[in-house]
Length: 227
Image (cartoon, rainbow, N blue to C red; front, side, top):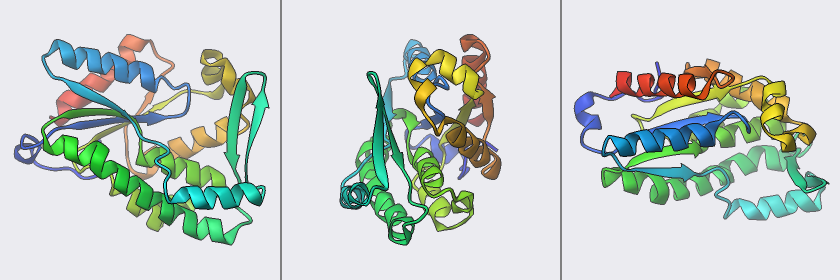
C-alpha cells in the first residue's frame, strides 16, 4: 500500500497527480524531487515542486507565546542555526497548537495543492502534513499522536491518490551529507518518528544511502505501479 486513500484509475485521470517524498533533513528529498521533475519534463509532463512545512499564520500567536515561555528557542553554531520546540510540560500548547497548525495547513493546502490538482497539474512535494506531524511528535515526545486525532486530521489533508514515499538513512550518513546536521540535537528523534510514521501508515521506506540512480529508479517504479 503506497497511498493513504487509494482511488480508481478513472478517478485519477480526471485530475492532477501528487507525489509526496518525505523524510529527515539530509535524506535526499530535494535531490530526488529535482531528478523526478526532470524525468517528468523529458516525458512532456510539467510538474510543480512544492515545499509546504511551515504555513504559519494563526499558529504564529502560539509560537510567540512559546518563545516567551522559553518553550521555543534557537541555537546558533557558527553560521548554522537550529530551532527547537519543547511542548511536553505545556498542556495548552500540547492540546491547542496541533489544531491551530492544522487550520493553517488546511488553508495553505487549498491554495497550493488542491487548486493546482483540479487544474490537472502534477505536484512533486517534499514537505507537507507528515513533516508537521513529525515536528509535533518530537516537540511533545508523544508518538501516540499518529493514532489519535492529529494523525487522522493531518493525513486527511493529503489528496486521496497521492503517492507517499519516505526516504531514510542513518544519522551518520545524514550528517556526512550535510555538515549543519552535526549540531542538530534532535536528528535521531526525527528519524525515529519518520520510521514510525512509515510503519504506522504502511508507506514505502526507501534507503537513501543507496546510489541516487537506484533511489530514483525505485521512486519511478512506485509511480508506474500506482498510475
